[in-house]
Length: 385
Image 1 (spheres, one colour):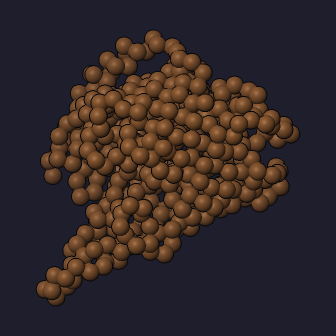
Image 2 (tube, one colour; image 1 turned 90 degrees about the vertical axis):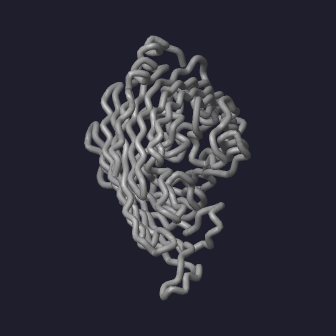
Image 3 (cartoon, one colour; image 1 turned 180 degrees about the vertical axis):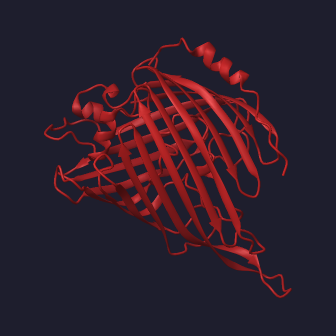
């Protein structure tokens, strides 16, 4: 295998250095701020990064115990325009390199509490990657235990983002996606990036003890042409130790792929590919600094036409520094290995020049499957109401 040389990081360092002094502002989706009468910065610094209060608010089903929300228009809209010097950053983008400047995303959010223990969330893209969008998340959740329960239990049904150590899309702060959560194996189109349809049971509070989730997921990949194949299963666990958070997950499933028959017939037939993915995460969050690392390994029993098994692996290390309450700098190294390998380095910063706005600037240096080095400068402007 040819060794991949890492790209020169000087342009990335220069990008950060030139913009380090820019101290400007961003908020998130302000539906909840309207309902409770506080600023968006109570839950977010630079969108979509959550404060500790924001994480508790989310875990509590969009509620503040003892506080009754005001009536407010229930729909929020987010618009994001983007510029990319080369390549397509969005895993949903399949038609080749994007234009240099596009309206990247237009999406609407509906979310909130329902009754004393229920909550709901709908996230729909009208435009995604500059093309016609689609529904992402649409779920209803109900807390099965009483307020303040030592071991809370929440049941969720619908289409939802999988419980990974970091959100692969909605709460991702970089324009460049995580390579491992867009990784596929051979002819199996499964990846962790899209939201999945199914049911989920969350058990426990990671701040008090071991917590986790059990997920039964419909075994299908929309748009792939493959027929649904039973139920996939995912187990995730998480535990907090002061500034540290440890997590792990396991996903198992089966897909009916096309393969060649044995015995010299060479007839195309369906091949059952049984696969699994194991992931391990560690996060350190102290003051203005946050470090996240994830490693993933997987196996497919029949990943191609010839029934060959395939091992996959990959991971990332991401470092985030909060410059002040209105801006942050971030850098990440990604790598994947399957039939070929990919490597990338992404770095840049984000600021909020006004409430409900965010501006980001990133440079990514990436080796593709053919070994070509791409320099991608990307920027985005987000507005939410």
